[in-house]
Length: 485
Image (cartoon, rainbow, N blue to C red):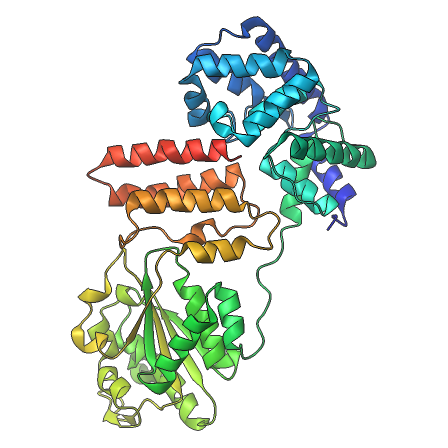
C-alpha cells in the first residue's frame, strides 16, 4: 500500500543529503556521460572498474562519496564485467548509441537472457538508458522497485522489456506526484522501502494452535503434529538440532506457545561454559547481613519452574534451553537425568535436602547447533532421555516464507541459498540454514552484508585449510548477486 508519510520521507532524505542532493548527482552523471563518449567501445578492465566508480559517485552532506549504488558497480561486480571487455564494450555501445526503440529491445533481450550480458544484472543496462533520458527512464535496482511497489501497490520485476517500461512509467508518475527529481528517486524510494517494511513481530495468541505453529515456522502441519505427539505420548523433552540459521530457537519458542497454557508459563535460558548446576537446579549464594557474610540455598531456574507447575497441576509449563550443547550437560543436569525419565518420583537435593520431582505438566525443549558440537557427543544417558528433532537447511521453508511478500526477492534469496548449500554440502553439519535469507526487502546491498558479515566469516573457519574454496564461492556469490539485481 502507498506510504502514508511519503512527503515526510522525501523531506527527511533531502535533509540527510543536504541542499546539493540532486545537483551533486547531476554533476556526477555528466562525468559518466563524458567518460562514455571518450572510451565507448574501447574500455579495458581497469577502465571498466573506473567506469563503475564514476557511476557510484554522488554527494552527501557536502562530501563527495562513491556509494550511490553500493554494492552495485563496485568490487567483484566490475572486475567480473572487466573479465570479458569485448562483450562489455559491445553491449554498452548498443545501449548507449542505438536509437531508443532499439536500445529498449536490447535491454529486453538482456533481461530475458542474462547470459547475453553476463554479470551486468538489471541495474547497468537500465542505468545507461537512464543517462540518455533521466526523465523517461528509471534505474532498475531492487530497492527502487520495492519502494515504488509500496507506493503503487504493484509488483515490479526486471524480466522483460515491457516490465521495465511499466516500471519506468509508474516511476515517472510517482515522481511527478511528489515533486521528486530523477536523481533523487533511488535514495528516496530506498527510504520508503525501509520505512514500510512489514512487522514480523505480531504477537501470537496466548495458546497457539498446531496450525499457527506450522504457519509461523513455514513447516508442514504434519511435522508439528509429529513433534507434539512425540512429546505428549512419550518423553516430555526434545532437542531441535541443526546448523546455524535453521530457526531452531524460533521453532522451539513457537512450539512452546502451543504446549504451554499461557505465555507466562514459558521460561527460556541459554547454556554457556560457565552455566552450572547451581544456576539450573540449586546452589549456595552469598548473602550479607548484620552478622556478616552468610550463605543461603537458592533454587535454580528449572527448580522454580517445577515448583510453579506443582502448584498448578492443570496448567502446562515449558522450559526452553537455548544453545544446550554449550554447557557441561552432565554437571548442569545432575539428578535431573533421573527425574526426567521417572516423572513424579522424588530425589533429595544436596544443598537444601529438599525432596523434589519433575511433574508431568512440565516440558523441556532444547536447541543445539551441530556446527559447534553434534548430538552424538552428548552423554548417552542424556541423549536417550530426549527426543531428537532435526532441523536441516530447508529450501521449502524459504520458498513458503517468500510467498506473499512483495519485497522478499525470492529469486535472489533462493539462488544464494542453493549456491552456498550445494557448495558446502547438503548434508554437511555446518551447511548454513535458510533463515539467513529470510530478511525483509532483500536487495543487493542487504545480500552482500549477509554474505560479508555473517556467512563468509562463518565459512572461513570451516574452510580454514581450504581458502581457495572460500575464494571461489565468494566470487560466485558476488556474481550471482550482480546478475539477479
